[in-house]
Image (cartoon, rainbow, N blue to C red; front, side, top):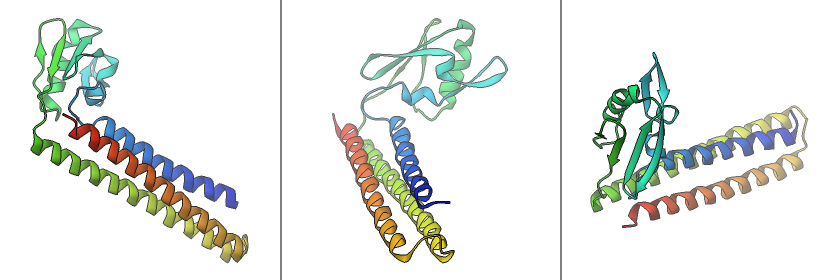
Length: 186
C-alpha cells in the first residue's frame, strides 16, 4: 500500500462520516414536512418489505403536511399500517385514495431536545473522523516500521491527516449549526 492510497482511505472514511451525518439530518424532523421523513418507512407489499418511496409518490402540499399517493390503491391499507408502526408520532389520514400526514408544530421543549440530539449526532460523527485518523496513523506507522516510508515523510503525512481532521470537524460543525438553525426556526 502506498502513502497516496493510505491518504485516500483516510479521506474516504472521513467523507463517509460526513455523508452519514447528512443522511441522518435529512430524516431528523424540523418544523416543516419533508419527504425524507418517511422514505425509510418499509411497507409490506407484494410479499416483501419495500421502501415507501417505491410504492407511493410523496409530495408536500403544505409546510407541515405530506401527501402520499400509492401507485396501486390496493397498497393503501398496507402503507397506512406501516406509517402507524413507524416512530413518526403522526396519525395518517386515509381518504380512500391518498394518505395525508399532518405534522403538529414543534414545542419549544421538543425543539431543544431535537437540537441536543443533533449535537450528539455531530459529536458521534467527529468521533468517527477521529477513529479514521487513528487507523490511518497506525497504517503510516506500520509503513515506517517496514521501511516503506521515511520518518520525515510519515511526519509530513501525519500533519496532512491532522489538517484533514480539522477540515472535516469544521464541516461537521457547519452541518450541526445549520440543522439546529432549521430546528429552532419558528
